[in-house]
Image (tube, rainbow, N blue to C red):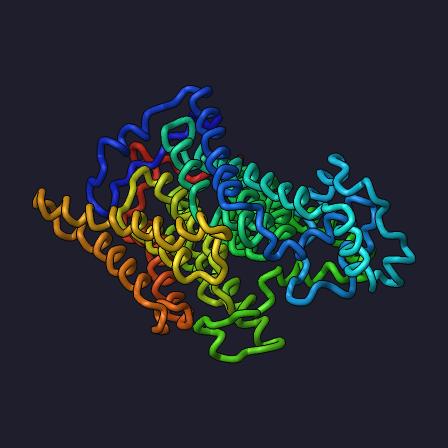
Length: 509
């Protein structure tokens, strides 16, 4: 069925930039070339993690203990009452999957798992008992490598969406996957911070969007529920889909999601005495450890903090999705409009966050890249934004990905020099060729940011103290870039039934 979907005809907002390249990407590919692209993207993802001494150990405690408990059939202690300080446990979907893999691979089975007595009444000693067990078995390293499997979920999600949008089986498919695999916030989810559940969540969310595009709302509901059971920010995908769903499909979509959630939530809530509910409802981001963002300065804590940091982006997404539906109607389910809306919705998380870790940008960065493929064009501004994000992560991000001498040199010197050098070359090419000078500003922005981040670290901007400044400088342009195709669609007259534009899915499907 995917081969029958025609892509939207859209013109790039930055002019006809790289026309021969984008035209080449629109050509159909054979199945074996697509598979070769999948393998190449997977190789890039795994190669970058291995090259920089990953997987990392930051935040492994958020999922490892649940994984080990589930792998050994001790579900009650998957969410103990006492956890590692500063590392709230993840929602249950990833531990279920990783626990199954760990059980099959018999990770740590050479040493008996702690007994019920060692785990303590109510599992109140589970954390210390499993820590001692892990030190005897060395289970943490092989358990961390399980996280790489979540790349498969993200890859499948990107492929499913591109094919539902009419860009699959074309050059866009392998190129988009390779670019996504090489994005710093993507592979750092495993290499540095160890948040594989974020990759799993976005992959499931993209699959849900693909199902919605094809009119399969029951499947979209199931996938949205699974995504939420992996990480809470999936609600920022589920909300637009619910609002945009045809009236006759809202109930099947909602019921499928609620039933799927209940199948997992109810048993885990009962067996863990309700401890799993907090992880499902608030996610691992409910831990304002570093702060520094704009809203962090409001010093909102407790219930007010939850409402501000967690509920506000969802409420804003509801209002935005309703407004888009009012303006576009069924055309809001057109590929470029839908992925643009979801990208903006995911960007709202960064607006209302208390922290600003580099992996938080993963969802927005990936959806921006997928948005470009969906439109069939490449904007200079998006490439420049990704370059600026890369510079910020390399020079100012909280946790470095270069943990050894070579990696540190690559992160702090080589990569910024390479990115800044390419930006300067882009400026010179435009000046020498006498092209449209409006194409200068994206590359000038990258060059200026490169110079700012290379300044001596005795100022607040380049030493990372003004996180709110970089939040505004990165998040606001990122959301505007995500919203631009949506606003273009809204300003255009309705094109339902126009040549080259696929109509929105019929509610009867």
